[in-house]
Length: 364
Image (cartoon, rainbow, N blue to C red; front, side, top):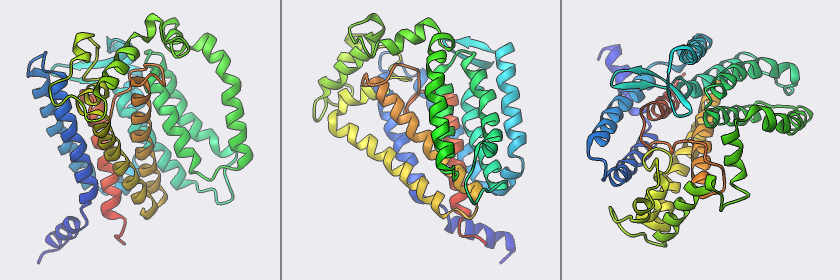
């Protein structure tokens, strides 16, 4: 048997079916939910999502096939390319709501979504190349802070506060696993608290402040979306109304059903039990990703997996939080369930990286 055939057999034997099946299960739930959310819009968007999923699965397998150590070696170059795209989209991109896109005909590319994965890769390379056994101080934080600052500022400038906030949360989560000294962590928390007031006064647009204020005043006009979503969730009760039977979301004409508020559709049709199933699916995916991180053969692989787990966790937490009225509406998608090309392909590429680490974690 040739060496290539032996290598292929080893790769197939190490294929992570738990990760793959958990991902596909969430994709399947997303398609069921999308069909219901789009029943008044016709099959065009649903067909487009199927095409995007096919591309996403191909991307998942392609990213998994390359040895992640090769990706690590060009990590800073990939990050630089992503940063260049962010600057270019500010200058030449098309504005859609608070986001900026490159209009490539049938495909819209949102560089801010791609940047989530590229920042994880860049942080992984830095932490792998500069281990701090005795604990990281402010000196060790200079480069990671630099890595995250430019994208956050560029994305906030779009202004896409939701995506900028997600990148910040991913960064904080990754750095919490980087052996920070306790006094360094305390200083970071202190600086964050001190900077909150000037950011609130000078860093946010008026409509963004009103969204936050709506949490304290649920009867305000800015809280209308959250109120309608809560009505839909409550009407689902324990077992839900059944597939294609949601009425509240349509009577009240809740916008963005298939992008920002798919959880409201799911909750009304499948109830409390259905919500538990979706959240359990995410929990399995996140915990399995963390398990792979604990078994990774190097710091880069472990950091990538932690970063992807953080990305999934914070997307789910923020999306469900804004749908249930716990957090302001910031336009964060629900992974693998919300409609959208850039978000879907980013998540699939990120999970491809996790598969990459999983396949090679026992290879020496």
